[in-house]
Structure formats: structure tokens, C-alpha cells
Amino acid sequence: MSFEYQYITTSEARDEAIDRLSRLNEISVDIEGDSLYHYNERVALIQISGEDRHYVFDPFLLDSVLELRPLFENRAILKIFHGSDYDITSLKRDYGFKIGPVYDTALAARAIGMLRYSLKELVFRYFQVTLSKEHQKSDWSVRPLSKEQLDYAAEDTVYLSSLRLLLNEEVEKRGRADQILEEFKLMEELAWTRKPFDPDDYIRIKGANALPPEGQQILRELVGIRDQLAKEKDLPPFKVAHSADLVRLATERPADETAFLDIFPRGRIVKDRLLWLEAISRGAALTKPLPKKSKKAGSVSSVPMTRYQQKLFVKLRLWRDKQAEAEGVEASMILTTLGLADIIKKRVASVEMLKTSSIIRKWQIDRYGEQLVKELTTSTP
Image (cartoon, rainbow, N blue to C red; front, side, top):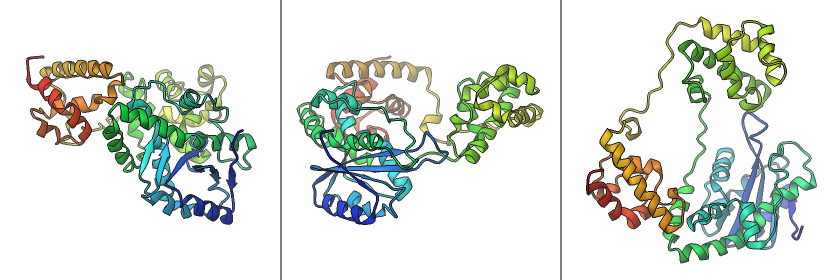
């Protein structure tokens, strides 16, 4: 490795590092979480770089990392991330940090038309350095961490400051500074949105809608047992049983252990087969109708499009895609599909009406507002 970093596990080292970082104009930030190994995920490492100093803070070994709050909340210090949504929401969830201002190198890369914008891709493109992804799926909750794991974690913030300068120059040339600045401000408001477990969410599983009512009742029971086991074992639900396996059980409905083992002769799902069989039996015996999930009354997304609006949506999407091709960016960098649907359902007929959308950004109105209104109000789709 061509750089050195400090692994922070004591309060003295933490306070000294914070003191140094607090004097800077910008810092680069990344985290590692343990979502692949636990039911409720936690921030397991916080990596911060500033100038030629690189630190890896260990929340599991430190008495506290709340001392980082003033650093993250100091608006005189820019915080550089790559793919900031997960990092920001996780730090808010675990520690309540209000982080800002923010710069996201992934969004900057997308704004200038890059289709491959992973940190590994960008670091190789600009610095001819290949970042290792060997430990990407490590269990970051296990201590002690190996030197290789720490090397991997530390490397993720080393290049962000230089990368920001290079990308921002391109952003300015492309005239997209207003876009990313508005998006960065919105990123500061991101919050953790994982809902508590709801058995009625079984319907979101691929294949659930195709099941007959009895099969859906069974699947709902199976999903409930999976969540119960995941909590007890402190595992993410997919490590207890894959959703596709639950759909198969709801479809084939084995009645005893022999039938169950014919379907799943091996695998982690076999260990709890008695519980799965009980859930199948319980679901098959239910006669109460399945609850219907209703969307929020009055929400635009709950209102289906008319045939005319569907045709208008296709027309607007074609305009959006052509505009994206002309500018050399992803279509979502012009306007998201959700945004298109929103303005059509609201029957937007003027630039002023565009401002009533909670989805459409100011930069989109400034740049495309008149074109959008023209597409919406001229000629029949």
C-alpha cells in the first residue's frame, strides 16, 4: 500500500484524530456495516480521510463515537462520499448525526455521463490503481479484524478528495453544477426507511401474486416464521430461507417431513422443517380473507392513469430518452420515470404548475420546464 492509516480503538487516539480533522476544509468518509450477518445491522467501521491523514474508527472497540458529531455537523467542512445514501442513513440511524454539506462522487460521475461509476472503476480510470474488493462481503462485526480487512476499509476514502476535484471540473464543463448541488442538499435529508416487519408484505415477494388465495395464506405464515427465526438467530431473513424457497413451499405444500425432505434434502432450511410444516398447516386452515394493502388515500401514485395519460406518458418518456441521448447521460439524469408519471397525473400545463411537484427538482424545471410543458400541451399523443 502506498499510504498509511491509523486504526482508532482508544479514546485518546479518537480525540487526537478528531482534533486534526476538525481543522480541515473537507474530509472523505465511508463506512462498513454488518447487514449481511445480522438481523439489525449496525455501523461496524467509520473511515475518514483528511489531506494525508487516514483513519479507521472502530465503534465496537471505542467507548463512544458520538464525539464525531461536531465533525460531521460542522458546515465549514465538506464531507465527500461515494454512494452517500447508505452511509448517511446508517450514521443517522445509529448515532443521530446530521451530516452536511455533502459531495457524492458517484452522482458527480453519473451527471457527466459515466455509465460505470463504481469507486473501483473511477479509481482505476483516473489513478490507474486497482482497488481490491476481496473483503467486500466480510463480516465486519467480528473482532479482531485482519490487517487485510483494515487495508481494504481504509483504501475506500484515500482517493475521494482527488476524485472530487477531477469530477467537479467535468461537472462544471458540462454545466451541471446546479444539478448536483441541489441533489447533494437533498442527500443531507435522507433518513433510514426500513419498516418494521409486516407479514402482509409477503405480497412483494416474486411469485406471490401468482399463488391462489390458500397459497398466499401459507406464504404469509411462512414469512412470519422466517422473521421470527431471523430475530432468534440474529441473521438477515434471507440467510434463514430464500424467498423463492418459501414460494416453493407455499406451492407444493408438503404435509410431513418426508415430503419436505423430498423438496429440500439439504440446506439451512431443513433444520427448521417442523416450524415450516406447522406454518404450512396453519396457513392452509385459515379461512379469513387476506388483508388488502391500500395506498395512501389521495396520493397521486394511488390514482391509475387514463388511456390518454398512458399515451402521454409514452410520448414524454420518448422525449426524455432522446434528451438523455443528446446530452450523453442516463435517462434518470434528465427525469425519473416516477417524475414523469407525477407531472402527467397532476395534469401539469405550465412551468408554474411544475413547481407543485414534490418530485421534480428546481434544476429540472430551470433546464427542461418549458420543453416539458410544450410536450405536455401540444399535439395529441
